[in-house]
Figure: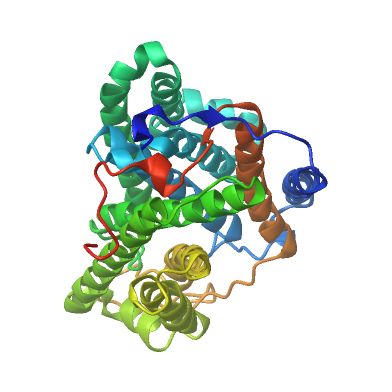
Length: 410
């Protein structure tokens, strides 16, 4: 039986019509995203759905989702290098590539949405280290360097012995990266919808689920398209792991809401999200909880349907959709609820004091966000085409018996 440590990695050969068509469509969306950013930059803020009350819209939703998914995408590699789960080793290279690609797509959207991207050098060179944004510049750029080195250690046979060290460093760095991203919201005390230390661990749990869901869909699609063997052992292991990550994200989300319900200063925003927030309440219960959590967990754990690749892919897609909705509720819903400018006092004026702020995403905002997604996928597609990233086989025989938990045991 073949050993898991001696898997052969091969580039995707050929230039079939389907591959070229997909590359072309991804290129169109990526260019359209840049065009949308140029349109918003030249026409001004008025062509977006954002206002001076809601300043982070759909582009930030896509950017934050891609950034935390990038951290989670590296988890499969960490499971092998750091925690010794050899069954995940064949997907270590792909995990690193996906992490780099998703982070690049997210940062592209982030930079183009912030306004004046031509002055990015000012933000990089003149920093206020009391701001979490300044910290994240180092966390994001450092992540690229750390993961590139980690990928090099995995791909260069001479340096394979250092992959555990590089993987451990990358694992710690990505935890710091996701903590920094969650802390953007956790440190904003003026917004009652944010202002929670639990945001950091909740974002880490979310990243595990989002990144693995994207990994499952990409792996199953790539192996189906290239007619490469994909066995049940690895797929079922990732299925079980995804279910655990979904449950962990749900746990932290419940803890966040229960903590806010206990604190009088957060009672208003909790009632807004959970009961009388209109579209945000619907998105929370129907989108995030039902479609993004309960249905995927049913598909992954119900013994009558969880052995089907279609069910696992459907669960993964719902996790992604539910994740985008969850990030939307956190970012936009947190801004829609009014700030308490003077606690203990009632404030009245003509400047929307105490009123719920409305927001309708505009087409350019959505296209910019989709452009970041397309850019990430385009990088992945080109990487597996020209680099030895994908194992030639992920069949049960190629995976081997080492460190395997059978479906019955799991």
